[in-house]
Image (cartoon, rainbow, N blue to C red):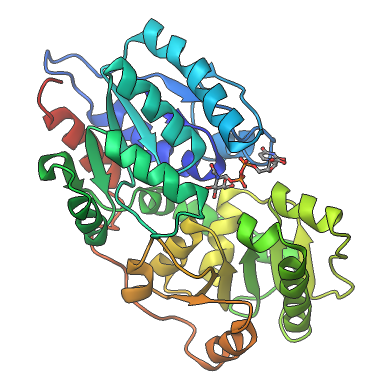
Length: 364
Ligand code: UD1
């Protein structure tokens, strides 16, 4: 049973489902069966349905339709609605991905029901427990039976936490599978024309973390910096619903300048094309730090830390802050337009390795 709940999960389950269909054979020789569960954590057409369509995902077998709520309410609602599905379907394995509330909630249910859990993208740590995702990562990894990691640093984090090494498998980055599979389609799109922008002559911005957008002075300062930047170079900023809501609540006006293109959330292929073609990316998203590293597009991450340090060490990523934002932007613009290298095993074959590991795990 494969679980997805929020936007970044959809890119991670798409290659997994394909790999299960293509390679999954049970010990008895019959094809592996799967069920897809959508928790409904994200429900807007632009945050969910659009990705199912674009990534060719099958309709979920079950939609728990939990919607938005406080962390405790959302997590507990997912648990309460997921438990009867597990009791009915009796899966041999549940596969969870990433670090959203759905990931942790479903893992907790399975641990109590003694259903085996495989966590894809295990072992990432920001060491910042003010981030809700860090709590989700720690709990999920403590309980999962198979920890499928994207990079060596993740293995080391899990080993430091005393997790049995036999459970930890380095499989590579599942997001890159989706990127590789959709790249030619993304390149055929007319994304740049749509925004009236040119290759390497615009900035791609995504910001949605509570630490950046839920605090009025921070969001106001970010928008002021972006408007300043937009005078020299177009800024494409598709705003997450949370960001849109906070801009409205704080009464922060969006543009006032034609170079600033504040839009609704965009689709996957548009985002891929913007990441590949941007002069640089400014983000607080985990996925975009990785995707820009794959394209070697310079990336500034507006956060004090990252759970993806390999993007700093090998890739094109640099952490920034509100204080340093302007000088970091100047530095990036003065530097080369492609930097860094692609980490090992970010090769488009991670999903197959995940399925192989699940099948090779005893008692399956
Ligand atoms: C969640 C994940 C975060 C991930 C992000 C990607 C957790 C703790 N956080 O954050 O790790 O980076 O998704 O998008 O799981 N909303 C809508 N429509 C939707 C979904 C949300 O309008 O389809 C609005 C609601 O007002 C909601 C707010 O966005 O309250 C935040 O949504 P939520 O799922 O709680 O967290 P995200 O910020 O999206």
